[in-house]
Length: 137
Image 1 (cartoon, rainbow, N blue to C red):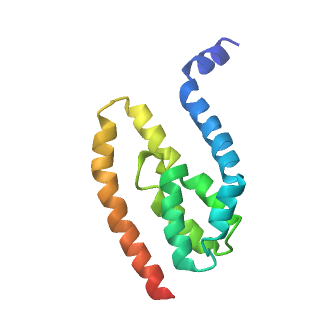
Image 2: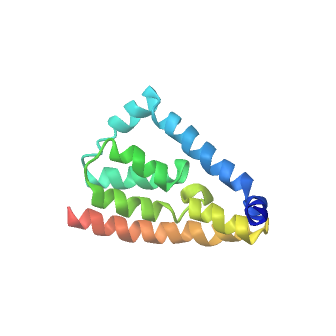
């Protein structure tokens, strides 16, 4: 029983709460009629539009909720898988792994250094992966 208490004390409850709220809130936002209409009107049956929408959505709502949202409106699972991985490279919220890593690092200035590398990186990767996708069509 003593070991169990130690485990509970070591859990990063704030980070866990962020994850819970993120999935609940973002799921509720994704279900709003205005969001459903916007995504539905985006023409996601075209792989190129799906790709661009996925990169953008990943930067706004994170890549896992973006994948869930896009999967409701598109059937091209390969593009969805590509785009949510690419989308995780950009802003801090692009991937929950980014939040975990920076939280574990514990440096406030790391956020600026992270974006100094991640934003140019997503530009390069999104361009290369997007070029491949556009040429494939």
